[in-house]
Structure formats: C-alpha cells, structure tokens
Length: 189
Image (cartoon, rainbow, N blue to C red; front, side):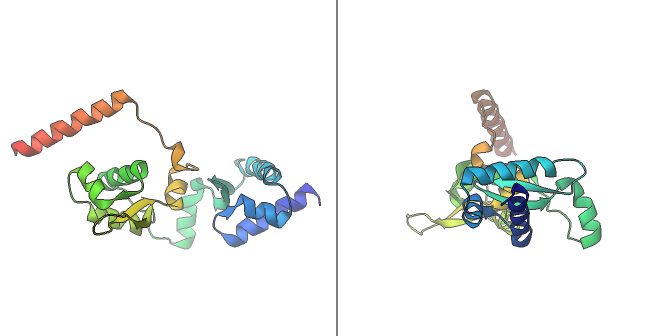
C-alpha cells in the first residue's frame, strides 16, 4: 500500500470517530508497527499545521484526534450557534489547578488546601468536563476521588499531566506568603 493510502485511511478513521483513537488501534487496523503509524501521523500533522488548513491532528498521551483549529472557533460559533465558551473564574481555576497537580484527590483534600468549601467549583468543573470521578478512596465514608479529563488536556494544549508546568521553590514560597497574608486579612475582619 502507498503512504498516501495509509494517510487517507487514518484521516477517514479520525474524521468518522470524532474522538481520540489510540495509536495502537490504528497500527492494528493498518497492520503496521506503532512507530510507522507515528511517522505517518507526524507527516500529516506537519501538513495540517500550515496556515491554509482548518483542521489539525491533536496528540494526547498515546492517542490522536482530528480537530478544528482553535483559531476558527469564532467562525464555528457563528455557523453552529454554539453556546458561549465556559468561563473559568479564579475559584474554578484554583480548584482545577489543585485537582490537576494532586490527582487523584478528594473534595475534602481540595477544601483543606483552599480553606473553603469547593462543592460548587467541583460540580461546575465536572459540568464543563474538565474533571471526572476516578473512583473512591478506601477510607471511612469512601469519598470520591477526582482527576482531570481528556477535555482538560485538550483545553490546555498538553498531551499528558506530566507536561504541566512545575513550580520552583521561590514561587512556592511566594504563594505560601500570599496565602498567609490573605488568611491574616480574613482573621482581622
């Protein structure tokens, strides 16, 4: 089979599926090694990456998906009349950050870190499909464990949580001091 035929098959599968497809499954279908499929995918990504293309192939962990380029969202909204984008408030971003970096984590653990109730924030993040239930903690009451979703990775443009930025010690110390100052202000009120 010619390389163009493999590309056509991959493109057709990704278009039809509309969701993430594992590279191992593509390799199985094409009867190729995973590395060969990755090579074909990267050639396709390069071509789709040009400015004159409206789609791209996103790679998340060991899977790929055919997507519309983010720059075209405004045009899609005009034609599809989609609901407005979800707005992530500071509270939602803070809660999401804690979950992303500490997952799997219970709501109570998030609340201990934040110092306030976060039930509403957790519910909103689940509604936005940025977090999901990962199971239950083997502890009294069997609290739910939360973690991030594929939609989280896609929304923040990372392939896995390992790509999230790491904070250095100076930043951590600065955040700790800010949190202590905020706590002091709340106590004074």
